[in-house]
Image: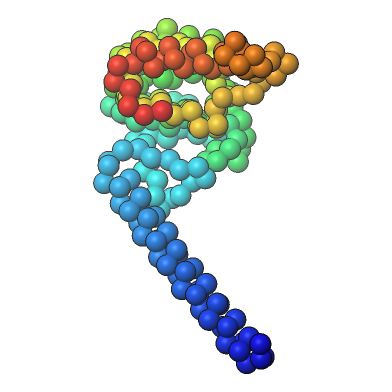
Length: 219
């Protein structure tokens, strides 16, 4: 093959690659535009990870504990809020001020003010059984009213998850990176005996939620 023939062949190959890349790029741009339009038109609260501020639809109220935004929340204003974000610690969207951990009863008293709450976005949190019990004890309306529970980037204990099974109105459950490996006993041989392997820590609590939430549409 002559040098000119080789050069011409390489140029044709590069042109095909360029055309294919442009086609893929246009398709990706169009798909992103469709996704943005669908999110915006849905009217639903939406948070991306990592955040995409040109796409995300914020909740009615956002409380960043690291900035003390939970202090002195007006009860009358809170009572009208239907969608709430609480950011507890570091992670995507968390404040640079660091982790602020409220006592269980203090957090329960905070959520008790949100008597019309339907969507709870609990970001970067350490969600324990004692915390959920404290919340539901003073805010039982959450079990009746909540339609969406989001725990992105949280440390969600299996025992805590099981307590949400009583929230019968829930339609959406979001556990993005919330199932902590701290709850796994990797020496226990999960699945080592095939079907005889013991259930994973979150299996039974999650199934309890699925069985007890007749309106559940999305996990």
